[in-house]
Amino acid sequence: MNSRERIMAVLAGEKPDMTPIFPKIAFANVLACEGMTVREYMTDPKCMAAACVSAYRKFGWDGVALHTDISSEGKALGTIYEQPENTPGILKEYLLKDLSETDKVKVPDPYTTESMRTVVEAVSLVKKEIGDEAYILGWTNGPLNVAGQVYNLDELLVSLLEEPEEVHRLLEKCTEVSCAYAAAMIEAGADMIAYGHATASQNVISRDCYLEFALPYEKRLVQSIHEHGAKALTHICGNIENIVDAIAQNGSDVVDFDHVCDIDRLRERMPDKIYRGNIDPALFAMGTEGEIREAVKRLLAQKGAEEKFFLGSGCEINLNTPVGNLKAFTEAGRKYGKK
Image (cartoon, rainbow, N blue to C red; front, side, top):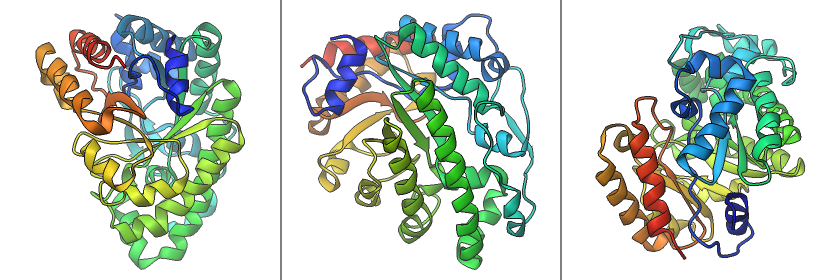
């Protein structure tokens, strides 16, 4: 099996030759390209595509992910960010000063509006170069995350309780934004769309708030992704063990889980889902190659990782991650993930 076939086998409910390796990595793809800056990666589709292809070939995993940081939708909608040379963007001014201004949120054209345009074009370039051998994942954000890009997050969270109708109005708009962006990436060649929804984590909001303000909009986003012919992945940072049964209702094909979660406990509450996770990004950045190998060995020895599983990172790979640790991760995955 090649990399693409390996991932597609798991998605089809079939047994792969080995556990697919697919860490969560976006702008840290630049680690594979000596001399490339984060700003170049974020703003030039040729650089983004080159970094993704180089990371795939250098580190030997089975899928590639195209994304900037969590500012893509916010930038496209009018929130002002500063883009340093070698770090993620820094938010400077929200689009909305008050929820009464929600009508300012207009669905942008992903083919002409930055940063969406860069990612969409990069997806197309990667598809042409390695689309037959690697699985291609595009990233958008879940509606609550998009809302937090255009309106102060602290005030948004208070508004869940004090102005729920206004929050729902904003989430309607944000869902349209995420759906449009996802559709453009699928048309460009993405096999799967992941959406980040950290604001929906039980570390941020309650289960009841998840059911009211996240799940209905996740369902619509996932439905739209499926209607456009791609698979969907849910990524919610932090602890999801107490909401994983609710996440199961959104219809996504794969669920990411962070390093604070345990695959066996997740399987108890949602047994049939395909999972991806969950080596700690801090271990990638600060651990030794031997510690990485041992962590992978332990994870793949758990019952919950025996099938319907992608070996990945718990969250985003950090820019200070040593290249040797990424290679050790793949080597261990191949050694201990054979079926």
